[in-house]
Image 1 (cartoon, rainbow over the protein chains, first blue to last red):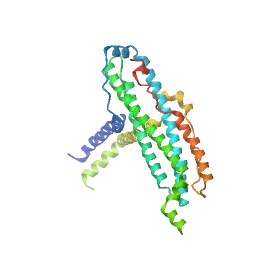
Image 2: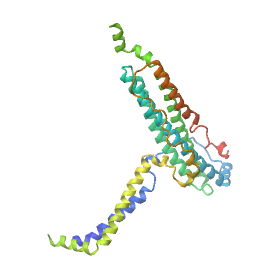
Image 3: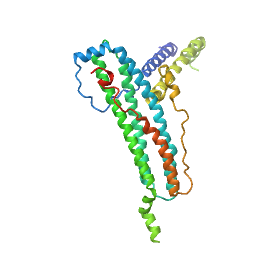
Image 4: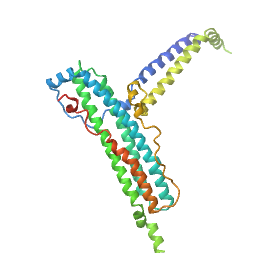
Length: 198
Length: 114
C-alpha cells in the first residue's frame, strides 16, 4: 500500500485518538477519584431511612448543592489565608532570624511541616470535593442505597479535611510559640554559648 | 524525490483544506485534553468559582487579601518579635474564626434522614 493511500487513514486515526483523549479528559483525574483513606463506617441502610431519602431527595440535593458552594468558598478564602501566613509572615521571619545569626532551625522545621500539611489539606479537599460531586450526581429517588453509601464516603472525606485544618491550626500555634521564644532558643545555641564564653 | 513522496505531496496539495481542518481540530482537541487534565489534577478546579452555581458566592471571595508582609531584613529585637507576633495573630485569627469544615453537616441528623 502506498503512503498516499495511508495518509487519510493516519489523519482519521489521529482525529479519533484526539476525540478519545478529549472525552477521557472530561472526567476528573484519577488522583481526585481516589477515595478517602479513612475506612467507611458500617452503616446499614434501614427501610425507614431509605424511604426518607427517597421522599426528601429534592431537599437533600438542594442542601448538598448549598454545602458544596459554601465549602468551595471556604476553600478559596482559607487557602488564601494559609498562603499569606506561609509566604508573607513565616518565610520572611525565618530569613530575618537566620540573617541575625539566631537559631532558626525549629522555625524552619515547623514551616516545612506547615507546607506539608497545606499540601495534605489541598489533596484531601480535592478528594472530598470529588466525593460530594459524585454524591450530587446520584439519583437518590431511584438509588437511595448508592446515595447513602456515597454519603458515608463524603462524610469521612469531610472529616479528613477538618483534621487537616486542625493540624494546620496546631502548627500555626506551634510556630507562634517558637517565634515568641526565639531569643530563649538563641541563648541555648552552641554558637552563642561560645560567643558568651569568649 | 521518490515517486511515493511525490504522490503524497500531490495528495496533500489536492486536499490541503481538509488536511488543514482535520489537523487543526485534532491539535486543538489534544491541547484542550491536556489542559483539562492539568486543571483537574492540579487542584485548580477546586479553586475555580467561575461556575454558574457559585455566582451568588463570588462577592464573598476575599480578593487581593495580601496581608502584612514582614520584612526579611533588619535587626532582631524583642520589639521586632512583638511586632511580628501582633501581625501574625491578626492574620491567623481570621483562619481560626472560619472554623473551616467543622461540624457535621453531612450527618444523618443534620440532613434529616435519621
